[in-house]
Image 1 (spheres, one colour):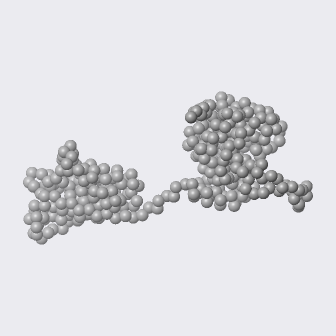
Image 2 (image 1 turned 90 degrees about the horizontal axis):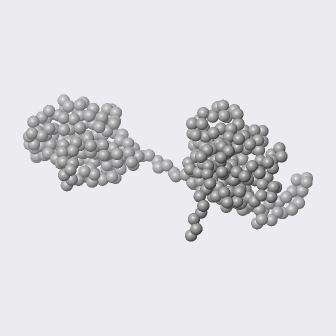
Length: 392
């Protein structure tokens, strides 16, 4: 299968957004559409397409003064709008580098343009000199008589198409277009090339690439935008429960909540044995159905022997972050006969809050004894139960 030739470069885009929007009662290109100004949808599509070395935005002088800094920061060039569309086009083209081999001209009131359509129009212009995206007409078109009150003729719908933008031009075609302009105004600049006898290639578009002209169009664009943009998953509070237990042995440091507690015994384990961090991490992972810490730190892995449980907590936080989850609250209950942990509550809470990057007010640590019952009651083991709430 023959490969399509690469698009000539450099390429430039001109986005016309200097209209006054009389039918909308104001500048339609700055009306809110799905949470941001209508114009930004087009601008962001052109910038993110990767097809252009420069993009010129044509705005009213007033808008350049009030909003110019915002658009300059996005990497756009700015040009002042003129009294007519052709004047605005000339102004925008004057800001385009003379070396641009292809130029795309787009109406900023068409927010649903896609990178695929832009690329197709550029390719057609590179081959034929000029291109216009278009769709077949859906409605039967009538031509009124001179009075405007009666039908003079029915036009053959199958022979007609509705033109859209971006309209794209090779540099030589663009020069011919501007030369053919005689001071008049045109809603579709490609008609100048038609009048000059130069070919304009039609590119199949789709009906969603609408131009917002009336309030009804804005409602339609909003509905289409919802269908094309991913629906954001609504955040909700989730809960997890964790449990851990370790034997105690002399000669081991006692690490709880990531801090060392004075005692003659510590906790045995593949890591430093921090039952609190282990229980909290299991609870956090469980809240997002991501398993438990043994999946990420298996006890069979001898390379992590003696690892700090803070590293386990860091990995847990990494997993939560990838899922868009944030810990809201921690409530940990240590079950131990010795040492007495009440004097260390504040220290353990502060350490736990630091490890998980939380406010101290959202962290609870407390201890209970087993009243001499079982291994824990004999001082031979220590356990922890933890409940965690996350927003995800």
